[in-house]
Length: 455
Image 1: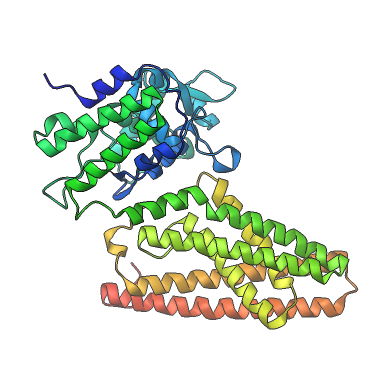
Image 2: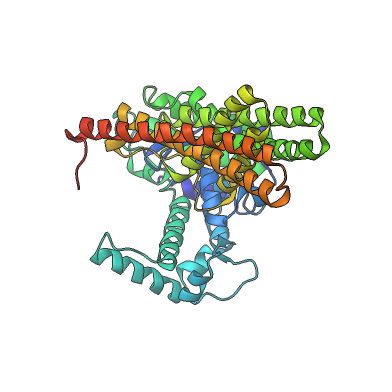
């Protein structure tokens, strides 16, 4: 009788592993998985799932679940599904959802998978949302309905991990465009190369349970090599997977806003202190933040293969970078520090929001086909959003001007200087916005054969 790989996993790991993630799990992180319309490292899938399930925000404690590294947590869920079905790890932070579903109050707002999937009130609320969508796929959901739907989808992802359906890590050995096989598919595919994966998966979990770090590393490496050998022309290159893992680990935008914040504070202090050294230190920190900012966007472009302005998260990050770019250019011309302090404060705010606000999802998703490989669309969007960046800088300078007006109204010469700087930023923004709008017409003509239409 063939044993399903998940049955093997459950048999060898009934208790939490004494292992805590270290370098031995690195080979496992680089295993590719087909998820969300693209290929990504298991490290990315685990982090995204952990944030989705536990409600963890990086700024307030990272992406761990019960103190476990996300990759180890995925392995633990596979290995002992019953324990994790009963573990209260699903955070339901929306009070409206808890009220609509009639969930019992909890101080930490965390519920178990089993509790939610058997709770009559929640299931009724989810059915109501699904019925509304069945009647009209374009129906507009209110905020509570959207959160109920998102929670239901999250439980579906968890169920897919428990069953192995969500873990599509096995490339099709003969069809490079075919869907990848999940761990749950291994029993249904009678091919020797595929069946070998079952044995390697069980060996990995046995090593994990033993707590032997060297064995875990060796087993994960063997599994990764075997998976990549199944479809060499399809499996992502190790370099590509490594770049995304590097992006996940470094968190360049967090380093950027920390450097921006410190630079902003030093620049602010340099004005009343009249200390050029403090101002130079502030500029240096701003440059460090700008370098991390550019590095992070470069990594996202490399990973996604497209410009970094396809969703709200990327737009916030890009516009903040553009504002800082223009500020540094103006600083090189005027050497006044006002551009830098205005842009640093706003860039800090933008990146903190991107790092912490759940609605700004930093996940890298593929573009819909109609938006791919369209040069004019790319130029149009980048130009317009750079115009927004110049206006963001102008807003910062305007706030400096207002502060000067209220707290130092007698400094009329400085007021005129700041007004000139504000005007320069507005000039750049207006030029870019007008150019971007006209390029939008070119894009429309290229895509639909005419420049504009009322439809």
